[in-house]
Image 1 (tube, helix red, strand yellow):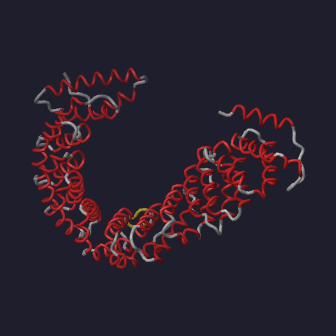
Image 2 (cartoon, one colour):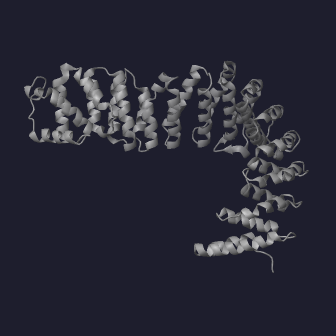
Image 3 (cartoon, helix red, strand yellow):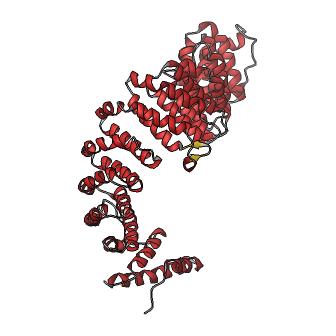
Length: 513
């Protein structure tokens, strides 16, 4: 029997088939050969066989019978076998299976290996599938690598430490001293991991924030260096390492919460980031957005918060719908605390109601209702009524409910209030909330001086469109109560009461449940 197929030969064979059945036949035949190869304890092709099995697994076919072979290859002294073994373990094993615990000893040996490449393989696997027990057993080796290893290994070890903290929170204290040292790193990859590790420590153990606040000058210096420096290896769309900048800003946000001294110390740098970051790319916009969140979630000065709102206002003018969406979401969070600053962007927010994107419409609608007050109720309600005529069906109920609530809170007059509700019933009567009819009837009954005007309006409305059930219910009640005003001319010119209309109203009332 000759040597088994190579991986690229198997891929070519699968790609050449024309039907699903032919593909299954090729894979079943190859899986049988792979099983035979695994049964041979001295097989020279175990690594090749496992590589082919992993490809089969990627196509969606069963590959569980290769789990134990991963363990054998990980224990091998050959690097090529060890690499395939670790890759297979990350793909075929997880912490729900007991088999993954069998590689703990092999990983421990590899973490202590003299080769940085082998150490890196073990660290990647531990960070990928390490269970609580495995993380607890190997935490000491990871801590040692954080202090005594090359940059290549150290950046993997620090991310592995983050995984360990998430799995075993009681080990946080073990990594606090070394994380302080890592914040002084100049290499971007290691520094990124260190910032992520400190962020995770502060989230898991809030009392550790006090210790890391002492390093605030160092963090501000690092952010300033990244922002103003130039590193060709880390530039993305003209912005130097936006990933590291975002991570540093998130850490500053955590450290600045409920601490005014920290907020004061970083306010100048936040203002500098806000004004100097390029907005022509997604990389720059991501840094700006994270800066806004940092300002919003800390006790920043009022001038800085206004600057944050203005940045979000610029986002609303972007042609990218994703940027506009996050801007609307953030403004919804800010509208209660910085109402006046958000109010200045009302025109741009209203413009978002005219977009064809439903998600943008929904966020803009929520924000518009939050911005309505006594002084702008008339123009805002005009825009909302216009939006109601063309808005998506799934937003009509939300829109009508918001209109009713705003009209009730900020109505300048009873007549305007009644006109607004009746106009909403005419436009979207089938989408109003259940209590809209009784609420409008209660309003009408208390406005005796408007009865003639109201009954005329309702009669004319149902004459044009008798299909809106809530409108017909209100009209039927009003005509029944104040029908004589239709022909008396007490407040309007008498109208010609058509028998067809009254008959249709009667029929609809009879059909009501």
